[in-house]
Length: 187
Length: 183
Image (cartoon, rainbow over all chains, first blue to last red):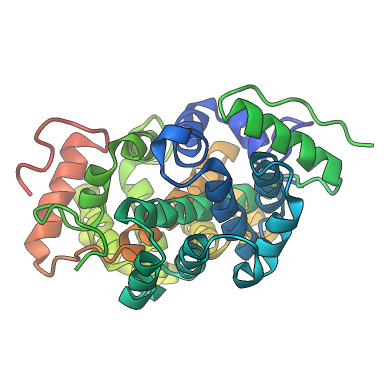
């Protein structure tokens, strides 16, 4: 049960976007820029979705972890294996050493920004990460600490059916974040 | 020393919002809507939400900045008490209940309980006030991590935060020409 009256048939942050369109606009502009637009980062949309998925998983936000996991899968040519591996432990996932180093930074930012050390940054640089990629990793992680709290702090509905998340993931991977949400019917 | 090159005259969040303008704009817009837009909570009350969350996340820059902003609207004793001893803070019962929710949400959204929400409703809080409280707490969980995760500079001069508080009061959060000229 959500903590406030939200439109039925829309899970997670979608119900909050319907409830409050005025705040939905900048929230969607931000996520479109940090995750989806290919030109805004030298990290691929798939890599950026993995950072969002990993952060949401660490925050135990079921809706966001499953949704961004599905978006990541669709951005990575259907590679569900790599998404699951990152959520379990990025060090054992088949991803670049650079992304592993960036996810190490993400894990610390998720806990507390002050946990990030100059050693973590130097290590990421050695793996080829640029200033902008380090910045973008910290911002994506910080942003998902926001989205996760918004979604869980108001007790929104997180479906159980993996097929729902797959449909949400496919929509966002192909359309980006600005198109209208569809209604989810529960069995 | 910040982990990435930022302008030396722009410490804390101000340098980060200058580093990447395309992401700064929606962050600024969201903040302006939540903290300065139309609301049944006063600007001072909303700055207290930003303050208690930043204090809970131990982000020195954000705590000092939003304490200074709250002090533009309220007696400075209010923000001090909210941070140190919320139970004894001179705020309304509704505000106290909303600040309890904000403090919990700032740690993790799942820590907000139905009991906390019921208490706030019993004190007169509306759905919109609950929504805005949680979203402000969530937004400052972003800011706190952004500011600390890149090791931005935290000025030690109290006068800096007083000047920043004036800017946040007079200009709000949207981008503007010469915004930090008086910083």
